[in-house]
Image 1 (cartoon, rainbow, N blue to C red):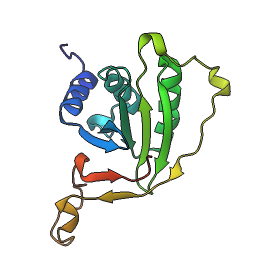
Image 2 (tube, rainbow, N blue to C red; image 1 turned 60 degrees about the horizontal axis):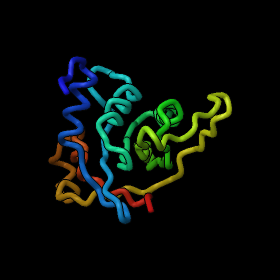
Image 3 (tube, helix red, strand yellow; image 1 turned 120 degrees about the horizontal axis):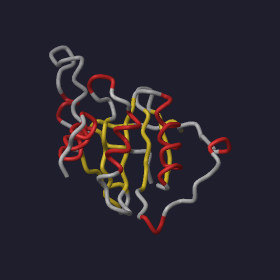
Length: 154
């Protein structure tokens, strides 16, 4: 697939370098939706959803409270399964399972969708970056996407 738009090119880059996590008995992809140029996070989420196969899960990370409601609505429109959302004090994390064309979740009336509040969660940085001296590291570098272990999913 040839990417033509900035959102598609960024989604290709994220998909190529996205982190894999083992959560229970499944592998999950994690993507940070904080793209450059203030791209729409929900547009980027949709482009990433289009790249996963049916049955695969992904975790989307955002710094914006509204994004988890946008992802719930996106899942409702596309028929994918929104599993849960969490908040660690800085990032909102949303877990989504991709559904195949024959296995879509029935669409609900948008005015009656339940938007559960993200539950409190804990993230643990297990990279060597966490051991770096905080006085010498770049304060704008978050240690990379693969540096986080999500402890809130079962």
